[in-house]
Length: 122
Image (cartoon, rainbow, N blue to C red; front, side):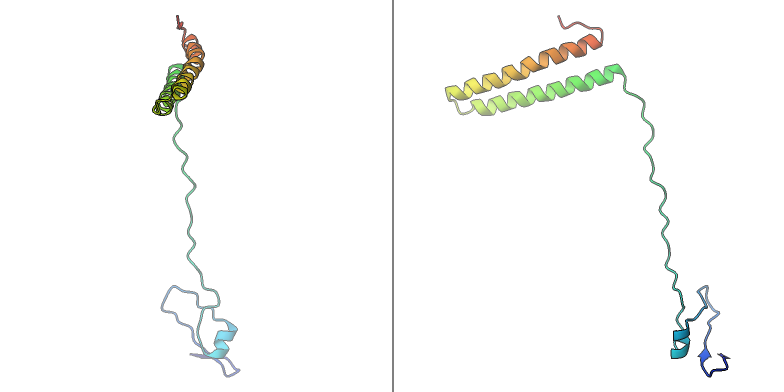
């Protein structure tokens, strides 16, 4: 223990790797708390970027477009089946319109995809 002329004693612990600075209020109250308590700082690594992907080929893009058209057409058929399940003439008519609309919009899109690949739809 060291004495500091004013009668207050100051205890400094040299046993560990912690801050030995003691605050004036702690010294005057007789408690030995560090003036600054250092909290561990978590350093986050920078976010990893996904590896660069190769650009899609025209064939891959065409395949993806055709798959989307297929899903949309399948959904139209499922909706038409659900609508027609009632058996009412208006239900069958609505189901038929649903299918005709889906197929009518799919055909020109398919032809554009085939043309982009150097193929003809006819």
